Length: 453
Image 1 (tube, one colour):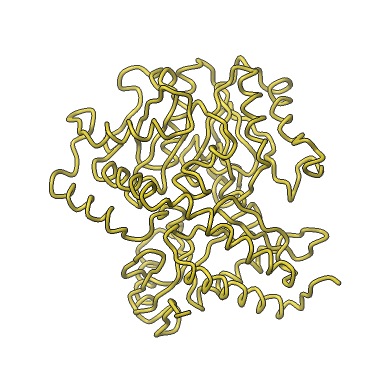
Image 2 (tube, helix red, strand yellow):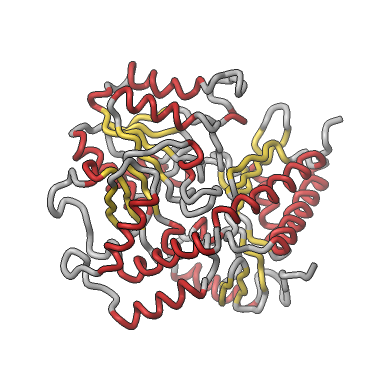
């Protein structure tokens, strides 16, 4: 097996250090960087920095690059569009690519047909507008979200998000009429039950919320991630989302599903909701929709999507033409290269390897995933499940020193999350997993951790 990692300087190298020093001087402090290197170019699942070091990228632009860095089919389409026109504002002078994208995406999304689409710029913007659409249709105000959720950083999206630091602390007051129930986090069960004997009793907490705390006739929608992303790559039991959908239908509440991170092949289906067989009323999409060009959308039942009157949603840059042509190529690539099927194969490889690691590495408390959306939760003690946040950061730091760039997530910052591009090769993935295991071993050794007898 050949090495794909190529380190020719220390990490970070001298040129990266110089740029990062300028960054500290001129860029707002909130924009702290994860990897201590400055990219020069990327191809597939590899990135090369300005010092000539090549890394295996497991971040995928935080789930944006399911088709990889600089997929030639996307690049060619973007170049063609750039030579034609960059902007008109669709509501001023429309363009066909947006109409074609709405037609294709509406047919593929797991929503009750007929479907319509509206396009925006970011995932948070899609969530904000989905809430507006739901309120316009139902003429109700309340929104129910879940503990551990992440829906973005704008005002309503931040209110729906369930992590104080760094996302909410100091930014209140927040939007009113948002309520929250626990999610199906089996490793840290909110009701201290055991699946499957529990019968997914945590789903009933939504029913209880609608009976005791906010009236169904005041509730516009429930918003849920089919797999929680920032919350820790939490995969609920397969029947959980069906139960949530049934409760929504029983109370006449819209089901809004956030597929910003889970969509476009990541979980082994084009949309993660497909695993449950549930159809939503509204679905939000972004990230890998356009392979790195800012583009997001809301897909939903036509009658719901048409509820806002003329000009009540929109924006100057929404549904930009470069993003639309990129998204059309992404849909073609998903089909031609069967990237959802590829995600299933990569996911099996990761799950098998991490579960084998779990047998000999006491830091690994839980391994979970759906398709190529795999999370590894690190704990200081398996019996108490005390989160190993500091140790997780140290594992990631050592990985980057060795040529692999992973990410973390979770309410305690103790979950290694795998968001590698779906075009990563088995050789590249195996090499990256070797580096992760070596880093875990080093951290365990320094901490004196051993697998319990």
